[in-house]
Amino acid sequence: MKEKLTIQLIMALILFLPFNRVIASEQKLIITGSSTVAPLMLEIAKAFEKKNPGVRIDVQSGGSSRGLSDARSGLADIGMASRGLKPEESDLKNYVVALDGICIILNKNNPVVKLTDQQIIQIFKGEIKNWKQVGGLDAAITVVNKAEGRSTLELFEQYFKLKNSEIKASVVIGDNEQGIKTVSGNTNAIGYVSIGAAEYNVELGTPIKLLSMSGVLATTENIKLGLYPLSRPLNLVTKASPEGLQKKFIEFATSSEVNTLVQQQYFVPAKK
Amino acid sequence: MFNSNTLSPQRNDFFLLWTLRSLSLIGGALSLLILLFIVFESSSVIQEIGGLSFFTDASWYPKEGLFNLVPMLAASLLAAFGAALLAAPLGILVGVFCNFYAPQSLAWFYRRCIDLLAGIPSVVYGFWGLVFLVPWIGSLRPPGASLISGIIILTIMILPTMAMTADAIFRTTSKSQLKSASALGFSKWSIIYKIVFPAARKNLFAGFILQIGRALGETMAILMVCGNVVQLPKSFFDPVRTLTANMALEMAYATGQHRSALFVSGLLLLILVVGLVFIADFFEQDLRYD
Image (cartoon, rainbow over all chains, first blue to last red; front, side):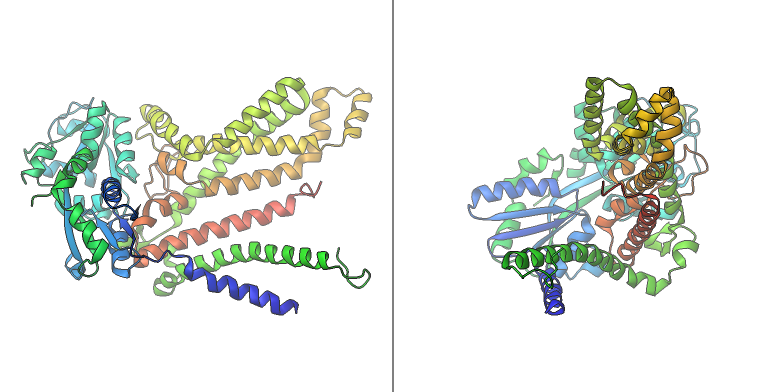
């Protein structure tokens, strides 16, 4: 008797575990992925829910890699990725919602106003260790790097042809906001974050400044014009050709109806 | 308690007994399931590269196949022990103050303050650390985000529970012993030093060990102030990454071997905490059942 009930209980426990995951239904969409895209997608989802009563959209952030793998495994109806797809990911369908750029940020009180690509590479590799060497004050440089797996880091590494193990970081951070807080609190720090987040903080009066890249000012305007080199598409990703609610949402998210929402998040609407 | 051989079996007892049994089974099963889950998730990478790699690889660059966890293990231990060493004397002094020196009303007020300190979410401490403590330490020795920042934040975080534990332990000191000592003309400090401390020593030590466990598990605040660079610190002013910060920073973005390796850091942390609990159990004297 005793053993039997114990076994039954254990069986029940084991049986119930796999069913905890929410199964995607017709009237509910699950969107997961990039923490860069997630805030924008939340706004778009709200607007979409307002237009279509009875529909619920669940947006979860967790990084581009998660968005892609969730879209592929079917855990999410739509994935979000803040980068273009890699060749091995070409089995997925992608739709550009907006554009984003990353920019190098310095503390406002740092007298340095310009750095060449080469200087940036040397700073992040630890070959230039003092601001004096690039025309600044005599102070050690605090290199702020992103944690491994972040798409911002991937884009940065790709552009400057660096490997993460070559970067000699003094501080490793998670999201954009933490990066901005770190640089605004340290006169000698250098970091990189999404332009959208950086512009927004400059407007709020956070003491940081955005560096130009190869002579092009880091502004959302220049990304829209395609002039700014360090930029990336923000994508929605699906496993197969979208259908039903999925299709309706993607059409909405890529239409000009969401331009205001995109701009409110300091991203750049994608060209049609 | 429900011995059915001597008492006639009652329906109510039967239901209560089995409800309690199944609830406790679920409770126990949950922790075992978590352990199994972590072991299962980490087993794939351990099988592929062997357990030794986590201690002998050149560094931690999971995307490049390097998985050394030693610097993070060291950082976790240093931060937790450092914080516990600072918080323990402070917490004990708070306990002594509340129990033996403060007037009733002040002690009450003081205890509420400590409760409040314990109730503040860790992310708030982390945020304060990020905008205030880190820049301040950075102005002394850049970059500011460092082992010492982590120790200070952790100290503030575990101080309230250390103080509450000490407070509770001192309150249970035998009243008759205290009265006898008073009657013998001992000074207040002699009573505390010669009678209260020796009686409470083992329980205080157990509390100390449990606080280390708590400090080991802290994540958000540590993530925000420690700098998260994977390295063995050469001084207190070097940035470090703890095991918990490692998981929090990379888990959301990790796949495959990388993800599995993060579970290995979780497993390592779990083993450390289990070890600490056993040590604490060894020293703790029936405090729980008083």
